[in-house]
Image (cartoon, rainbow, N blue to C red; front, side):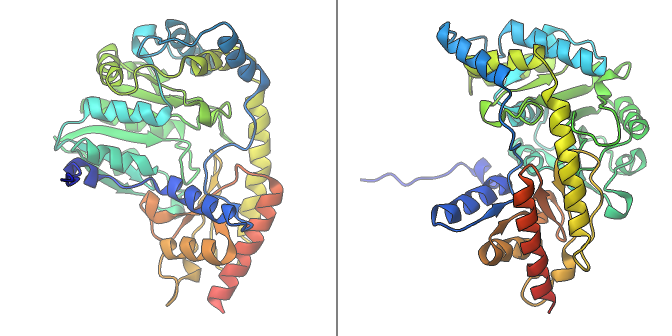
Length: 395
């Protein structure tokens, strides 16, 4: 007798990651021999710096291949605190830090440890795809704050205040933003922190792209006096050091929250990979010159992508101030055949062989996300195809 699979109800509250699905669809076509231009993946095309790779090789050769503490080695946690202090002027200690299996894991751990069923979590739109699903999985309620491309997708304290209730437990801020590339001005960020801290609402700052700013200097809200009591930093080495596959992230938070997150991690993944932790240690303490080099190239690509998109009649684009994404409004191409950005992305991949992520994944219906963390050659080819595709839809 064969048992009938009954999937747990909580799994129905989450969806497959849209960004991963786009990458899988593009890869499926590539395996069939199709010349696909992939703007879907949010992954640096740069190699991991040589000194970081060598640290991992050394870890293997010296047999650093055993379990470590569930929350990461003390040495790496100290190094993360030190790097954050040098970069942003914060003052975290080892008990206020943990290492995770990527930045996404830090966010998952935090929300599962902090959010009770019925708690409200405020999330500005557009948002990174995972926030909504992880809150739903915890039984929380997402409260979305709509922003406007006319104001650069920037959220303000006044906008946040209108959504605060006695049930608000957490506010999530992602600056620089994935997908829009918007950067929250420092003064407004501080106003938002002051607003929610007075209400005893936690603020999670997702600093995945914190070093990739084109106009402003890197800033962490955790550096503001008094912030450590209610601010949680979710960090990642993936983008900053081109270490996406290494899966090393971290969290900085009050010690009781770190303790709760670490308890959860001890029963899920245990420790992050020991070898990757040694690579992360070198990333934290080694030369930092690869970061500005990548930023300079991203700036060159950003300028090209924005200018090229603006050559497409009817397509509008807010200038990204950080990260490595463009988020153009492609509604000019909507009609009987293509009704929203999901249709646009689907048809674009199947007909023009260009992979983008539809705005529905991020809470909007008129935009698509284009990652310019790829070569100039790919950008030129892909944007030419998008231009032709839009022209055909409008004809």
